[in-house]
Image (cartoon, rainbow, N blue to C red; front, side, top):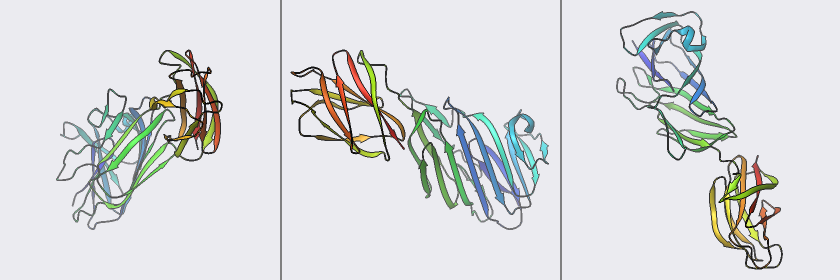
Length: 306
């Protein structure tokens, strides 16, 4: 009786033997590197099967492919397949660490700088994605899939074709599922956009900072002196969130789409009003900051989300 698993990230096929379907608990943790394309992956599987085997890419050996491999006793075979060779283990558990880079068929980088990772959907024995093949097609009893991102990156979106729970904590993203199989996961991310040195040929100066506890917040803008016809635009994390806003004594409330970690809000003067410079009071989560802008400079603040 042959049972197979498609291991995440690497497009490899593994197999196990045993008489009765067992509980299968799988965990994969990927630490993305600063280049956004290479990674270190730790994976482990626990089951009640008697033997287990997996494949590694043709031309690689266990000594140069794995940073860590458990159990250390195994039988490595060169087989006739043009893509893979085979490793046999005694027992139904394994753990491994691999350092590698994503292939172009699973990771693309758009002209906009967005990285899109998507598990391959190539079918193998009528299965696809991340799968466990068994006689009763029971799949994974527990399936835990985790990515840890460098501070320089932000998570844009994620989805799976199976029911489960997504959890985003600081710089990590996790997907938890039970009794599932043929899992396809897509994750989109990009490098965070820091405060620019210049904005429309004006010098940008960071003049203050504040901390908030949630990404779900708003911004209130008002003139903190005499209402004199100031018109501003606001630039947050590389994007304009409002253009041509007339600053008045009465506060104007705007949505502030923050991300966890550092955010940069820059005020750009479209004019200087009747009383230069252009000045506006910003209220964020009950905290007040004043920004000024002229024809030569734009002031900004750093907003850190816990």
